[in-house]
Length: 160
Image (tube, rainbow, N blue to C red; front, side, top):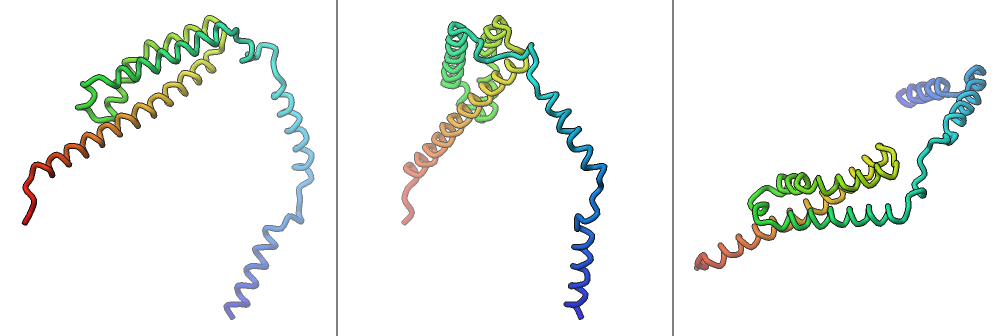
């Protein structure tokens, strides 16, 4: 009895899901939608071209990015950050070096790069450095804690 009931429900479900009753108006709308999408994908004459940057601008951005990385690494080496939580320390390091990152914005702006592209590049650079610094600070914190645990074990007398 259960098998027959299951069979009937399955047949009804398949019939409800079948595509025999197609709507002809939906078929005529599809080409219009794709035509509209094709019209909007055409490049405009004011679109920015990334390959239009000069070699000096590219070198300047690379140099500014290198200076930003050096700022972050030097700032992370300071002793004050060792006593802080690694996430808080990472946030403080990134905030300290934000003016160095702003130099990239001025370089791009002087070349006429759109703001959205500048923001995307700076966000990616900031996130990449945040991940690297957070990872290194977490590793340093874990190694300090592990070293402190081993020192305590060495100082305590062995159980007999």
